Amino acid sequence: MIKDIQDKIIRLKKERDVCILAHSYMSEEICEIADFTGDSYALSVKAKTAPQSTVIMCGVRFMAETVKMLSPQKKVYLANPAAGCPMAEQFDREVIAEVKKMYPDYAVVAYVNTTAELKTIADVCVTSSSAVKICRAIPEKNILFIPDINLGTYVKNQVPEKNFKLLSGGCPTHAKIEKSDVLSAKKAHPNALFLVHPECRPEVVALADYVGSTTGIMDYAEKSAAKEFIIGTENSIVQHLQFRCAGKKFYPLSKDLVCHNMKITTLADVLNCLEEGGEEIVLDEELRQQAVKCINKMIIYGG
Image (cartoon, rainbow, N blue to C red):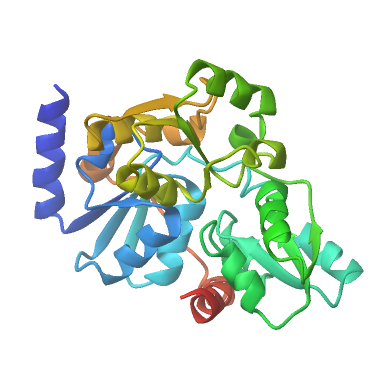
């Protein structure tokens, strides 16, 4: 049944000139029918150069918005319109504008996990893999980092020469993991390396053998000579690595490391989007132009 649906999706996307993007937190059966898989920003860059005129994002809303920001000439659809991101939606533009008044000499550095509206007030955007490099590179000494306090803390510790102001936002899925979860996992799997996403709490990150983005974690595990790994990010990555790395063992840090917004998208949603058309992402052109400025700055400073 799964193979039947996948075959139909593959046929339809070719017939209808559609590029399918799947974030790494999607299920394996969705990743298998995608043209590109990976982290959110990397997917939006792939979409920009893809020849197809239409894009379906299997991810969450801010990711589809980023695709539209970089490819305004293309039709962009979100596979499941209910897929949001609690971190991206924690602050709105008005709230950050008020905070900015309190710290007028601070550059606003926005994690890519933010809405298009919030990006309009940012000076530069960052990904989890480029945040340290960009915060070092920008000329401003003072940085207001939004919205993730855990990623912000990680960057702050790596860039002590800058002054950081952090807000109490973040990813609820990563943030609920505690040090005790790590100690339990290490006790159960004493020979395993611990790989973690910097959206986790500082006391969790401090115990890691490797800290990096989702793609970074997967690349590290694939290339490492080690045979066992505890994965400190969304549990779908455990499944993907089990498929990719025969002979290696992967363990979830916690059964609770599940993003329900990512999991809401199903293979049937992708098929329905192709057959019936899902929610098209439409951005006001003035807003889009304002929001994309911080991404252009990210490219200048981070590559």
